[in-house]
Amino acid sequence: MGASDSDLDNIFESKKRVKNPLVPIGNSQLGQKLMRARVVVQGATVALMVGTAYYYGEKF
Image 1 (spheres, rainbow, N blue to C red):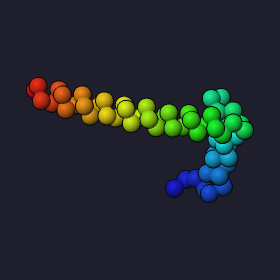
Image 2: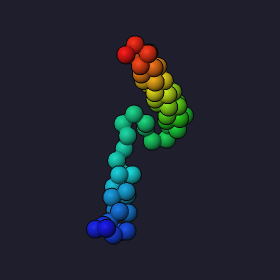
Image 3: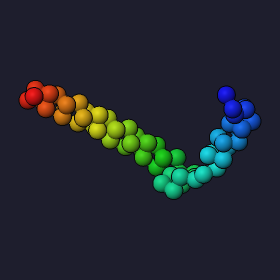
Image 4: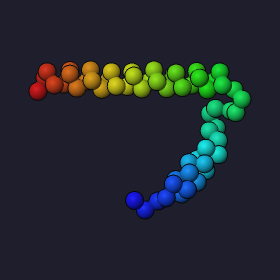
């Protein structure tokens, strides 16, 4: 492709330096809780989508 390995490394390094405002550095407990909450909410979203598709699929 067009990008070399060093270009990709530079892109990833600059992304690592960007600080996430929701997860302060050094507070890994909060980070874990937020990550688990995100996974739970994503699972609920997928379940809701599947349930909605099933519900309306029966009607049409």
